Length: 509
Image (cartoon, rainbow, N blue to C red):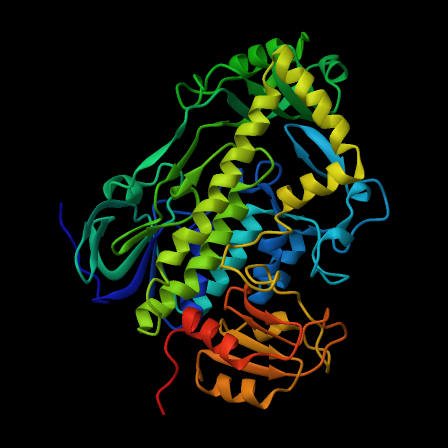
């Protein structure tokens, strides 16, 4: 095979996979001024799996905050149905194993350090719209995107990584695999990837129902003695068939097969006159033991796979990208403190493990067994209470995500509240350039001087706010996570230690 060498001799970062995770990571790195190459196997981004109804995804609270902090929310908004600040009507807020909880049962006031009007529930977006917005931003930031260029060989070295893709060879200082659940990068670089095998084959299908079959299927989700199905009129059907995942990618999906499976699971004599589009999935749940090996890293489904129940996968991957981007950029620029890049696995691996456990628990409740049915009934009763609905929403929406950054203020490790600052701006606007922010409500001369020691990496903002939540100062990492906070007289030494830990050594003057 002829190998063509591109004109760009060395990229700072090569990313495999131009899905939402790879694109968002590329945006983060491009924002930091790095040279980024994005390699994508597909020739064209269009796919029915990214359009309605297959491509509808829920964006969690952390994902909405991340998009807002990078001025991307408005670009995604045309296809978004946001639910901000609670709800006044009885609308579904999500589900666990097909069991719904409702927005008006969720008590968001129990979530400390969340301001009124902040994101407190998910919003819907199509994958097509999300990818289009991220692609436009990546290109505007100078990211190079090569389509029809799937990775087939990786040769990591001490200082660079050579990547062979689409008949070309590329060199980068770092390689990030964002190339999905069957990640070539993960396999080529021998990342350990362990977990549990599937219990079911899931089907999503756009069909035409024969009369009177449409009247035989009730709208909504339904647990049955043989599995679970849902029907969204006029013809979108989802099925969970507990066959051990035997059918997934094992044969062509035909109208006859989907009809027979739906009949068996639903217990009806439903007739499908046409199968327009369909896809299968499973609940196989695996996770890489580490997200970094040398100069190769993993993010998104390349690092962890699980069932799509509850829509956790996209949000988990976007969280990976937001966490990794600024850390990798600082490493490339040579300003990163020791072990900063290792904190990516340390912070994100536990979040991934929790999502996998959440996914397995849902499948366990969905099994068509007497024990699972009994547990599902108890779970349904629990979710109908205010405490139960609030707990499930907190977990499903990621509203109280916290990294373990050590002892300290209860806000440390959590998402920074989006304070409305004097003058009408917001903290999220201060984070849009991708820098850290030292927000000082106390106007401390010592903190102002401290910020100057990290000039170029830290923006100092001394102002008041509509509601300071009792805080006097906080140091916010570029990803919007609070690294240090004070609700008394700020201790400059404490803030200096936090700045050194996350931003590296101060500037020598």
